[in-house]
Image (cartoon, rainbow, N blue to C red; front, side):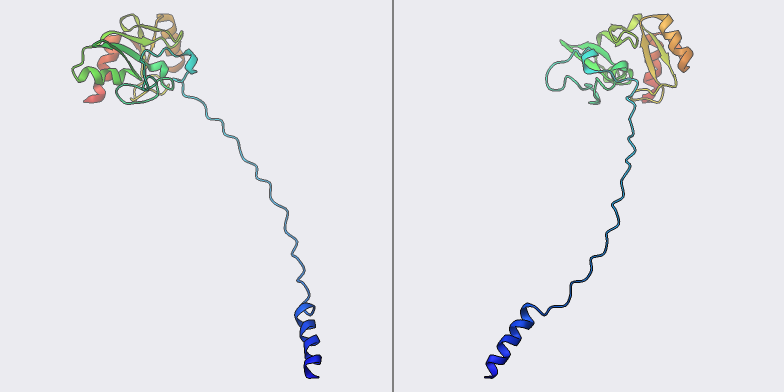
Length: 177
């Protein structure tokens, strides 16, 4: 008889006699995160790959032969030269000077004309040295122009001085002293 009395009591306790559910706390509304969109301005030296003349071939064609930097990203300071039988490309006059310091003989050196983005012989270029536009691989920027008028217009806007290739190269070699 006891088991007939306790069995239903145990079932009631186990199945239905639980404490009342706690009231749910009301969750505060989620805060909306306002992400500030920061647009990164591309470097002055950068151009779309379709506008860059790249003279190297193979898997490393997009990279400076001296330092490995991306030639499209630093295209407006890019130089080229023939070494042995290969066309090589440098991200800057600094890296071309480094190659010369290694004793390499560079033939037919060219530089990118900032205005047209075409390669021109370095001996025909007017370099603006020391402008307020960030340089590549150096604190002293060096940008080349096919036209003296273009170089002077750039200089008027950004400062620096106009020099020929030999003077720009001499200044680039000072980075190694």
